[in-house]
Image (tube, rainbow, N blue to C red):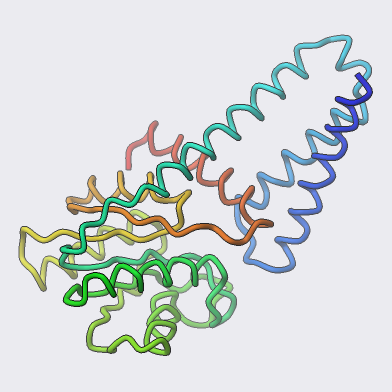
Length: 244
């Protein structure tokens, strides 16, 4: 019983510390709030452990929630790590994620590096960078991605910027409009995004009428991983209920 309480206090404290760290080093978002709330619940469960242990059901419910969240996050990452690209796609599409001012974040760089790998294997493919400008960003995500790729030797003429989107759904709809103008029909797209985000992006892309393969980029920012997986799990549940 004492060991369980220590685990609850430790996990709660770590998640709250992670939420504070994310507030300092990255853009504020719903995922950070989820981490703070979950950390607070775990910490409270540890502090008031004795009455909760006697009641049992609150701890059972909390344990079930943790198992479901960890399982869902793991499933999303495993799916995202499965590469289905062929090297024959007409375009490589990179979905944007938050930037800091005009600087590419670790997560964004991972996506762009993965896209570079796909583009190297498929030298005739167009590269589409998709992402608008958020409230904590001084330029669009598409512009930041464009600069990153050009600095690494990609011909600017090979890159198309989609810089109006503010969500995954808009990423895919606006990109389809650009690609329809260029290719007409019958084209395929290698979709590149973070591994945990691949599943929802693929479902949304297909709902938008795009024929896609997938290549997930590993998430190297460990402090941000819980927030991103929690936010993505919530987004997937919303998609299942309301559609892509």
